[in-house]
Length: 403
Image (tube, rainbow, N blue to C red; front, side):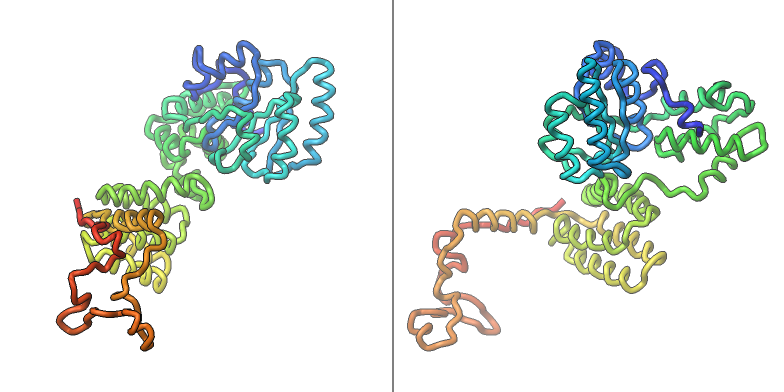
């Protein structure tokens, strides 16, 4: 068994983090102490304690506990648990079904679980790193409480690390290794606030290096092949980072925009995806405040397409700084929004006769294109009439503002 498994907390006294849920008088602690069970979804990042918390709930409520991985199990496995749950029900014993990565179960699989959760035969504890609003079917979600688990902070990670290094029974205490402050801080920073990654890295550092002191150089060696952070192109963090990137440019913060750009690039994001977002941003958030922004963004996309990685990173950084420091205006998107609202309000207004095309004599006789001039000096109606339909001629959609 690896260190992370051996050090898994067995009760709330050993559990670190998630104080908003398990501190004195908080909801999950009260549930455990009163042995009052209900179905729930634990939503949080990897290594935040979802599986551990589910096991603690089971052990402290005298429940029969079954753990599934949504990747490896399906409806047939569920049927076997249902049979056992009915036996437990007869014996007045509760059944907890823990499904890790429940977001990976499809609709049909989740539907098969629904009646048993609804009847109370099974108490469901689902764990997910993805937003359950999108990944768990509505009927099942409505029968569960959703609890959001936070990333472990440095203080709690340091406590976990110290205990693992000193514990002679389950931890690494018999190895007699120490870790100075700078190496400890580096390890905590590189683990991405994931306790499991931190403990795995600590175990590698202790068991694979002879030195009695775990130095920063050893920590760097352990992490040399690790990616730059938590990132999945189809998961929440992907959308969170691109959102932060766009909002940083919108807020004219070039440093923050570069940071989020670097995070995407270091985690293998498609550079053309980033470049496409720049083009949208140039029209949506800069617009006419800097008439060269759209040209620059489009040029960046073309250059990225032609050059490819890794040199395309410089082009993306160049364009990011341009867009982040450019003047901003929402005039384009606001004007379009007002125009669309008016279309819904007046969907079928007749096109003014003077604006209609007149390719035939009949159309000309009916007044199409009448009094419309098109010369080098003037384009538009000869008389004082609007380009808009009659009932809309006083409407104003475009108002230019910038910051």
